[in-house]
View 1 (cartoon, rainbow, N blue to C red):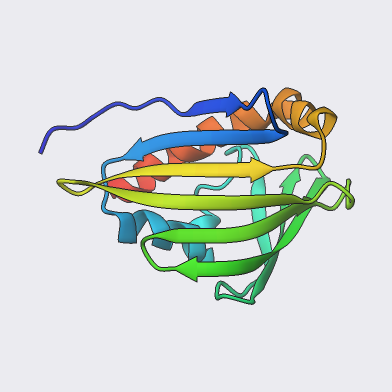
View 2 (cartoon, rainbow, N blue to C red):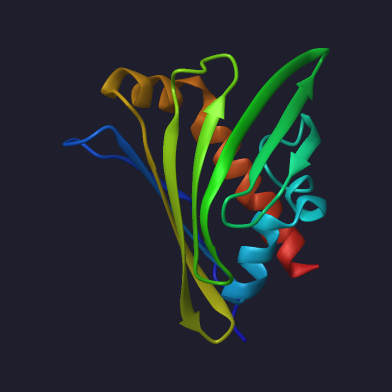
Length: 159
């Protein structure tokens, strides 16, 4: 099977305060999905590698919730949300909140598209409440953290 090198594409929608992230993986949808809902796997790839990720709880089911912390040089960055719909290998709909900005809730939809030959295209959209909020996410390191995390996910899926 050929190996494809895919870059993570991050696009800010000009019409609505939405961020779209597109990434292809050399793994089937079920495996990519599992890496998003199994906390033992999530801690191995989510976010920048310089951070330690600590899961406070991770109830990955429709109606469940999560809370985790990223720790870097003594600073904690806390995140939480709710799982609104989970369809194994197909879809995750969830909310996402950075605890430092509790009014900035994003609605996120992750679609796992089967490309055949054991490959998946992940399309993740995050709808935030304002263009200012969206742009702050884009400026404050989201792009680097997402790209680095997906590079780490690539390595995890290959292992």
